[in-house]
Image (cartoon, rainbow over all chains, first blue to last red; front, side, top):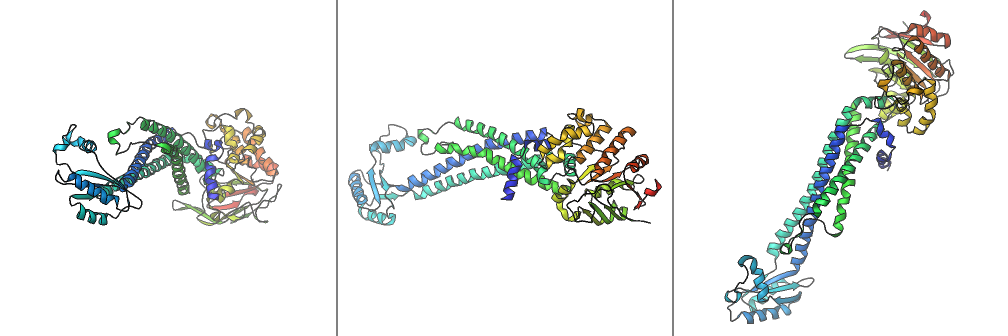
Length: 300
Length: 247
């Protein structure tokens, strides 16, 4: 608790305490630029993470509750097998609804590959039945056994085969986004540490005088911590604002991409970037404090 | 040869926050080596509260080094340095910093922060101690006392040597320290100014502060001895000896 109070005092202490260290133009500009650039990148990494998260959630939840039954049969038997399959599905526990796609719906599904005006009725296209699961879902193995007996031309596709890699990929993308944010934070800490060490080295004589007149390490460190923390906060605020504006002007996902998701923020996710400047300031505070105290101890 | 200098306080002693019967600063069998050469050895010195000492000796004898040992800027090679009754080695960095707030030092080269005006340099010890309000209350009187009221907003590089020495003295006393160490405080100033500085130090001594002045200026010592009961110590041949009877 005392440690926390002392750390907070580094920021809230009298502004005149900062004046004991002369202005350092080079390190000030470096800190401002680094914080702004890193915050700008962090906004995009955050947007990527959140978008990937939405994608993973959507694929995991929506596709997990649907399945497709494909019926391949001679044209004369197609209607009978479709009706037989629907009867089986109607009596299967865990199936909320089952519906045969219309010719128009099937044409729309094939349109991206074959173009419009596809003469569907002249092609041996299988009949598709959309199945929506109930909670907790149906027994896929049992359903396949029943269908094999009653509708020999039916193949059940519960999407598992291709859904899991997609969900996994989206999950990894989200993880990469957060990893990128972590790396941005670490790079910010490294750059600010270097800037703080440069400032400390440039002010070695000032620090010596301060020690001679009774300054404690925490007081000297405080002058640097306050300065670097406030600069990081200001730089990160500018970078975050620029990043959010840039995300605002990103093109939105169109209808054809509805299966995907827009790269950006939605709803309350717009509030997340607000956390970037305080986090940048926290990183600067910890990095500068550690650098300053280590530097001061090394001087004794 | 006399190696051990025990000095009593004779000019307005006051009780400090350290064990009774001990000095504000005590050096016991101290040796100091630098670059393989021994600057002095077996040096014992006690600065009692309210005492007044001069430290003389040829250039290179180690007067400034001895002063630095007294405010723990240097660490003795062997022996013990006690600040206010505590071994300086046991104080730690923060402890040394707190002890220095009770030791006013007038450095030979003054040691100012050149980016701050004189007034801020003088009040720096109080600012660092979190007593900024007190600093502002005492500053006008203090600057008037050292004759620097008109120079309050000037930066240290803009001041003359004498003004810098007086400013250093003002900074040394603003915390009302228990002891004042002055290293060649009159080295860069004329005789009139050195008399004025000496008068200030004598006044402080009469207020109970222990004073140790390192100087080459024998005339200054003679003048001081006319005003105050001062002991003169001579550092030569790696030893500290009493030299008051020669002056």
